[in-house]
Amino acid sequence: MFKLTCDSTVDLSKSYLDERDIEFISLQFILNDETYDDDMGQSMAYADFYQKIRDGAMPTTSQVNVQQYIDFFEPMLQRGEEVLHIGFSSGLSGSHSASVVARNELLEKYPESQLLLIDSLAASSGHGMVLDMAADLRDKGVSIEEAFLALEKDKLKVHHWFFTTDLTHFKRGGRVSPAAAAIGGLLNICPLMNVSHEGKLTPREKVRGKKKVIEEMVKKMQEHAEGGTHYAGKVFLSHSDCLDDAKKVAELIEERFPNFIKPIRIESVGTVIGSHTGPGTVALFFLGDERVD
Image 1 (spheres, one colour):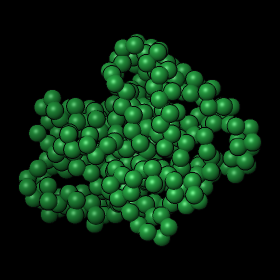
Image 2 (image 1 turned 45 degrees about the vertical axis):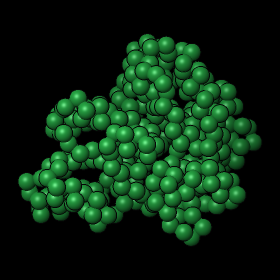
Image 3 (image 1 turned 90 degrees about the horizontal axis):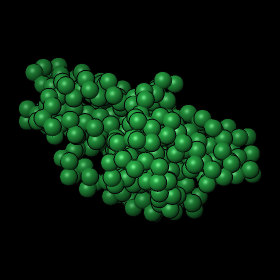
Image 4 (image 1 turned 90 degrees about the vertical axis):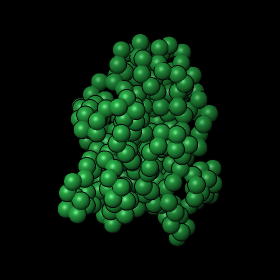
């Protein structure tokens, strides 16, 4: 059985990773001139993190560098483990590129080792859903090579649809223009966005009001999920300190999709992703048709 690892941006709980024997490497965030690991709320509780943002803090983030990946992977290779790493989208971070450089250096030193890297082209619990697929394959006894090929084939079937009620941090990150953010705030616009086939955040629709954007997001699931309303796969949700909004999405999904694998997994958006979304974001993840734009 191969070793499964990931970047911290999977936005799954530490208990989930422990239960499934998955190791992670932390990206970092900088808040009020202090640097912290993005480590599933261990260094800073999510509630404290989002409250600091509401109080005016503007966190920034840093990717994993080459040496950090070498230090992370090398003990596993020394133990003779085969390693499959599920990385954060290359469309959003340079971490995947750093992991490739680290892999090349390590395989020069350990030429008989097996270290395979997946660019998930996914974020938050969408990245987590790709990881979950990998864990299911591993636990079925699939070889590392077979798992790698299956994930490369299916990773773009993981859909990410999300909305935000606060455009401040999307404006700061260049995802939404200052003018659009100002108008959106005045008109109560909640943009509906997704992650493209290139693994980048992409605004798709401008929806007025939270209730309507929740409806539109679930409609996207009806349009794209495998089997439509007969969808029989897993459903993940993540939220940045707005659990009640995530629960409203979950209720609507439970009403319209009777056959999905229950329960819906609801997770917190972690500190690295949350540094770019701020509070008030809800994201929905499911398997569907292949993302093509």
